[in-house]
Image 1 (cartoon, one colour):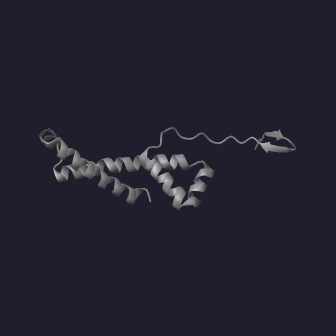
Image 2 (cartoon, rainbow, N blue to C red):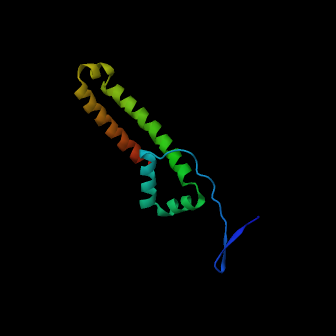
Image 3 (cartoon, one colour):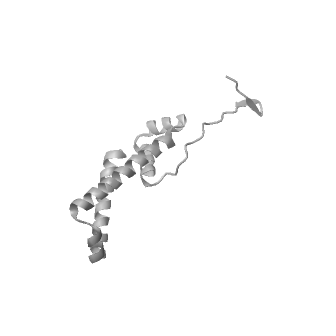
Length: 115
């Protein structure tokens, strides 16, 4: 290994360059997973931070959670008859039912994927 050092007062400090973080923005489910790890699994959280794998993990979980959420919303809407026809006939009822479906799907994803 070829290490370089920087003199800081009487001490030599190694120049450590971390690996670049993966590209991507953390959204709702990624941030929820991060909060859960930080609050309830601090050992795992700290290990991931120190190894530089936290953001990669969060992006992967986020992608899986979003795809499961979208699939659940679609399945629930189809099963409960929340269609475009209902949207044309009664927009308020359609919005109420879709909000209910989205809330239930989010709860399912949170319990299954983010814990």
